Length: 406
Ligand code: PMP
Image 1 (cartoon, rainbow, N blue to C red):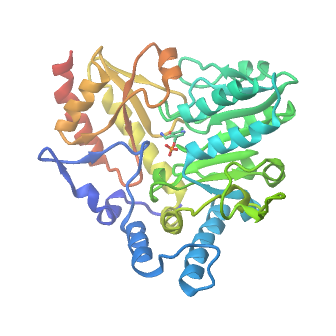
Image 2 (cartoon, rainbow, N blue to C red):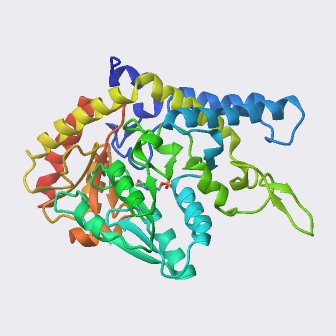
Image 3 (cartoon, protein in one colour):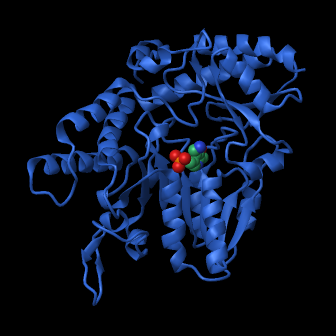
């Protein structure tokens, strides 16, 4: 494993030098969006100052360079997640659009009474597109419950399958609980029952090694902005045979073979699913982000984040009245908590006064909040550039605000 020093990364993130309310900022909202290193920012600036030109159709040099930069990212993503072919890498606006694409397009192949399984801990973006599909096509949604520690009960999961089950959609890592779901095992069970599996990798991709073939994922989706890359771009990985069967998601330029009023044909994969001008500058910079993350070694990042998680969790027990939601073994570096009966919003505001940037609310997981019997939580989440000093400042801030809230 590579040597790793979070402190050594800090000069690459000028934003982390910011002060908030006169205090050193501690950025602990990485599950929502990570910061981008200067290399990524430079890639965007470089494109705007030297190669900005529309991709695909151009014969001129700028257009060809822009196309090559975008396609190089496709190959980089393919290798990064272990996909067999670049035909299987569809560029989207992010996780949400990737799931909507599958629900909308694969959904066309489903019939009334077909069943889809999701889990109680899904993000709204892995619930609502399936609910829309159920309304549109009469499909049925089933929900895997969880145990008190935030892990899924695979016994119940198995029992939900029927001959009508077509697809399972599950988060690789919960954005609230940090639970790492056993997706390889869940994929095996789904396949044994003749169903497909879509894995929402939004919270996994920057925190652990992901190999779509080893996981057995039929679809795997994620967003660049949660992996040190630009906003507005993301990926849908899909197995080629499935993508071939699926109808287009949106119509427009680039996704066609030939257009005539007598009938239109579709482009080859992956372009069949990429109508219109993509965010080719963001996509080019996305490759820089993957290079950057890979250069650190994802295993080294994972180990570092795990150490921070253990240190922070241990020290949080010093705070009277603290309740942590999600304690499954091997969980990722996400800590959702409440202090006594204090409202999550009040805690978040007070922490912000002290320069601590955490997320508060239902985290787009209202069904999970309902299961937990709460309205929301405060969530601290870690990334490669967080340090022990960040945790110490976070704990010191909690120690200050906790007595004000109880
Ligand atoms: N799924 C999970 C598990 C997430 O954490 C998020 C982002 N909070 C999303 C989906 C949606 O990602 P995006 O907003 O980038 O589409």
